[in-house]
Length: 336
Ligand SMILES: [Zn+2]
Image 1 (spheres, rainbow, N blue to C red):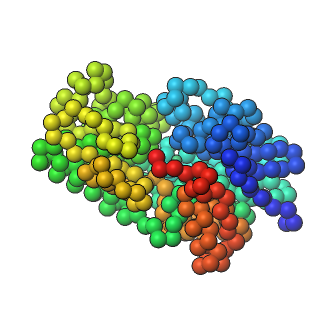
Image 2 (cartoon, protein in one colour):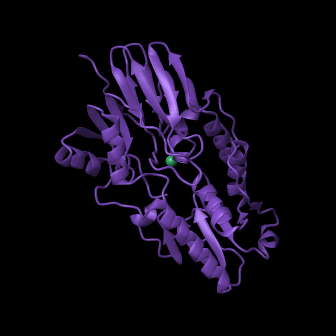
Image 3 (cartoon, rainbow, N blue to C red):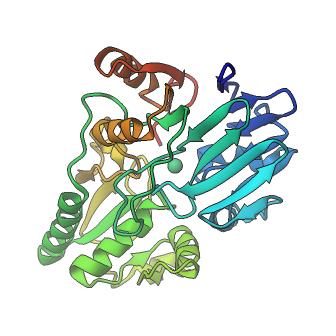
């Protein structure tokens, strides 16, 4: 095949064909195209909903967007997995294991061959999501958010047990444990761990509750109590509380409180304002990402996200792969 895919970074992952421009996960209003693919509902991936052009995303992504921002979307909504055609392109959507509705995109063009865009990827799955399929391809655009070669996460099972131990101990010692986690995805995983490991039905912040309702609608069994206004009153008598991810602990009116932050960024940054930091991530770290890359069998790999440069350099040197950073932390990633 003489011609191949050559993705470029222009405030989105941009794929230029003779007849159309495909833009994946635009970061702002400059990142448009004829066809806009939106991989999932986290805030740094949804700017494309405000652009013109045909938008494609999963049904759950549109519902989670609405739950967070109160806005409906005009888009072609797909189930996972599914396939569709757009002019000369065949497009396949598969789960990514990251959050509800998170999609990998596989694009096939008769002259360019096959390209896979993983989006934010969790290769191992979780207590909520099954491990996603590996999508083989000629060209791979892969998540490198935690792609630093020295980065490792403890196993999910160990982290779930640590969450359960920390909550139990805090309760036994007379504290109210508050777990701060991203409202979309991580908070639901924490709720599930509290349900399954401790039989607890946590009180959850209204934002977490709105998102969790979407999870319930899509068949994810979660037990939680939504915090209702007046908030001060609702918090009285709370045993364990799941709150949104913040830089500092929420000022909750508990006499004795212990705060934990639950995020993969706890393996990179210090969260000294919290009593406990648990590096539970919706992304895979380097070893799992490499296993995905090897299984996908691409001739060329583009890395995307915070550690894009480091990961591409390591893939070139140690794995003898043709690899290039598409966009790293200077352009896009920020500490949440
Ligand atoms: Zn994400």
